[in-house]
Image (cartoon, rainbow, N blue to C red):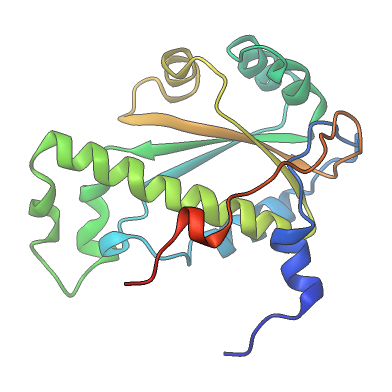
Length: 195
């Protein structure tokens, strides 16, 4: 594989920003489907892909989600053309016979409820990261958030399932409204080492 050019790296990382303001332009359903069709190829342990995505786009669904958010997140949810609930399905082992067919016993690897929850949370978090990068790759801006009532969101959006919310992210075409100056990052020697 070839290294991405500077413009692509800027779009994905160095110039991309967490957005707080949104243009009213809707995101076509075809783009939301294309977005998921990129995300699904990101690697997860045993190809478990436990993440589940709810694209909150209707005014009614936005109101419901905004009411369960904290602080300044409600206006962002109401303004963005879509806010995605990234959840994780604790029943993900049920799909392993289909998704990881070369290991017929893979479903049994997750008998321990704690290991199952950690596996689902960890891998859905990976998929959430892929989601952010895939959205940026498609020309969308992203505003990930963790300030919301998880139990309330689970009841409102996942009731009757074994899915739990991980985090939410507004997506669309961002504005400069509420854009903070870029914050510093840790240098390599502060955050990494080579052994």
